[in-house]
Length: 146
Ligand code: ATP
Ligand code: MG
Image (cartoon, rainbow, N blue to C red; front, side, top):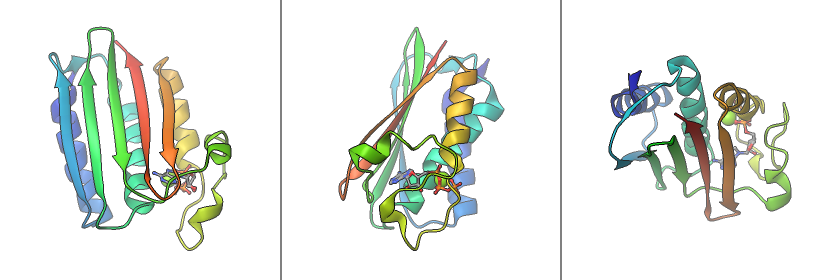
């Protein structure tokens, strides 16, 4: 059993420190109980990958949100950015190893972050979904059953 709220706050500090980003990342929480039976290592990998993507694929002026929604039957995490976005056709392929979208020219990456995230979510019997619009921003939602 971990305290998910404290976990998120510590993780945000880590991400902000090792990415040296000037992005402002806001933490928002909904719900009551923030204790959940989650594997810390898997959750760390999921959230750092999503947050580092949000940083990498948006300009430093853009806002990033980490939203925690603790419900009785599931814990829901959302990482929201105002970055370059992902086209509908490309959204289907994000979890293929080494896949990168057309609009990332000049931004360094290997295309392995999201496949790893998907594996970690699967291990939790969770679900991941993406909602994105090119030039507007991206929201990744991860739902982990409790
Ligand atoms: P790395 O292996 O370092 O994570 P990567 O970031 O390119 O490299 P993934 O994290 O797997 O790889 O992401 C795959 C692709 O999905 C990215 O190359 C990018 O095209 C797209 N993508 C992922 N997250 C976002 C985002 N928040 N906004 C826009 N595009 C994104
Ligand atoms: Mg990545």
